[in-house]
Length: 180
Image (tube, rainbow, N blue to C red; front, top):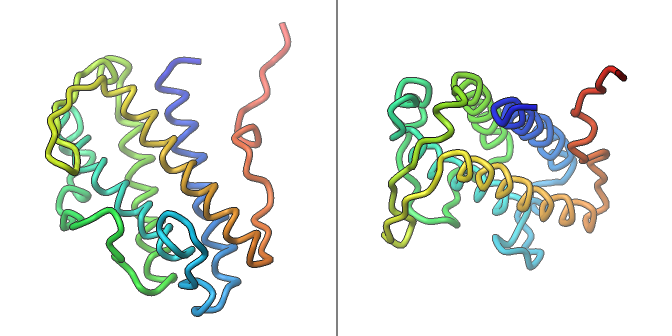
C-alpha cells in the first residue's frame, strides 16, 4: 500500500474514531464532561478541545505547502489558537459539529495530496517559536499519531466514567486483501 493510501486510511480512521468518541462522550452529563480527571488537559471536554486546537495548529502549518493552500483554505481562515489548552468550545455539541467539519477538511485535503507532495520539506515554527524543517510525510504521521494518543486518553477517561466506546482498532478499517 502506497504511503498516500495509508494516510487516506488514517484520515478515515480519524473521522470514524472521532464520531465514536463524541457519541460516547455525549452519554455524559455536562458536569461529568468537564470534571478534572487528572489527564494532561484535565477533562474529557478539555482533551477533546486540545485535539481540535492541535489539529488547527498543524493544519494551518500544513497549508503553507505549495500544493495545499487551496485545499486547506477554510482552516487557514480560522483564528489561530492562543494556547494548547485553549477551550475553543464549552459545549460538547458545538465542539462535535466543528470536529466533524474539521474531519471532513482533513479527509478532503489528504485525498488531494500526491505522493510527490509528501516529499516536501515543511519549514515552520513550533508553538515556542523554534524553527523546524521536517519532511511533510513524517509530520503527517505525527499529526495522526497525536490524535490517536489523545483519543486513547479520552477513551480511558470515558471508561473510568463507565462509558464504553466500543471497538477502537485501526484493524477494523483495514480492507481484506485477495489471496494470491
